Image 1: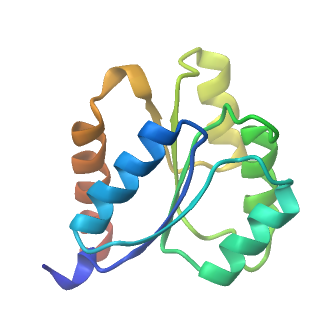
Image 2: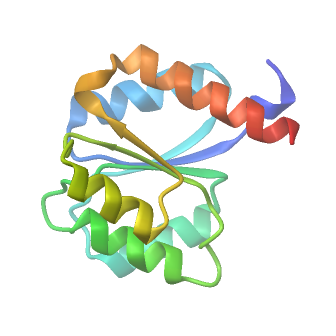
Length: 134
């Protein structure tokens, strides 16, 4: 296991199959993971992120009780956590959603239908490895 893979990852996803598959795949590669299903209010999720202090966040935009765009906006406005890179992983494939995500400060925008979970995990790991080299 390389040192640059021993990162902390916070995953916010309401689909249990996707959530726990991502957690398992990243954990096998040495990531420390924390998860949230998006059923808490935004401030509680932000508090969990502050406490865990992840290196990266994976965020679904379509959540049961939280607007993912609003969560992204509050995350990027928070002085303690705004620098944490965010990977959007969503079914929202329209151009307006992509533009809105970028304007709110997401670092990467991935559409679920474009990737298998393994492909997405590999892509995220490659991005993290490249960022670690900089």
